[in-house]
Length: 313
Image 1 (cartoon, rainbow, N blue to C red):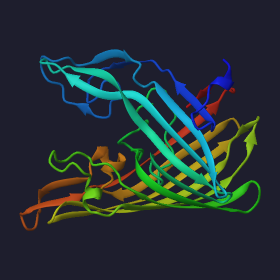
Image 2 (image 1 turned 135 degrees about the vertical axis):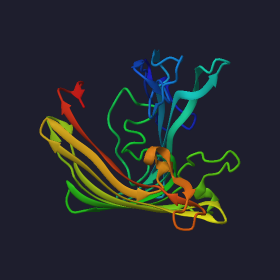
Image 3 (image 1 turned 90 degrees about the vertical axis):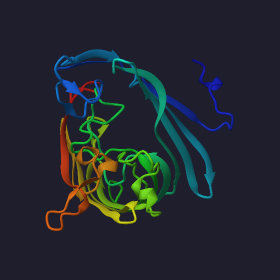
Image 4 (image 1 turned 180 degrees about the vertical axis):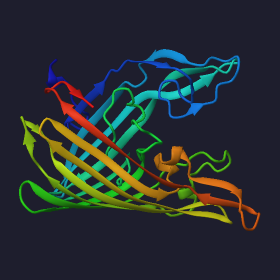
């Protein structure tokens, strides 16, 4: 195609990317979501004990734009959408996936030589990695069981400290508003938003750039922390926190990536099967009590590069 005719109204560079993806699935059991199961549910007599189907709803479209220089900073923006929104049900209780357009991630950025500022709706700063899998694109793999992935509104600042052309340390800090885990139909905002304070997050990482067979495979180690206050009512407030670690280790033809975390009330990030709090009777006082769910998890992925277009994970 004639690329000269593909342009933005502002004449700044605009790049269109995407993935047309077909998935087929089969479930031997009852699950919460036939296409992307997170929970196994109880089998009821007389109902179907499995499902099979196919979908194109995980198709992704994205726009990447380069904007004007503001002072000495380079501006950029990007947005991605898929068709994983919208679910309806009939009188028999069966769901129909409507395939409505859904915003996935979006961000605006200003980049200097050693400093970056970003505002967006993206993955948590403290959890930058997710497993690679074409089976789970609309929702990253290991969601709710070791991957703090949930996209949230954030404001981030990064300061890079280079030691050489290949080695550097990065210091990152941000404000985040994680989603609600859906405990009430009355309170439409999330417990973090209701507290009238954002969540605070930070991460420090070391990076060593290297290339193997013409492919960039950096060595990265990072540690992060998060702190937030959740407000449910005047007598129920929960302190949410997390400590995280992440790594990306190239091993010739292989690459090992992973994360680990420990914290409390991380349902808004995808931890504890999306549970922030539990409510029950205090064993000492006998009165109702709400406590944040203690949670720990992590993931490891080994990537085998079999060529420029083929890999196994």
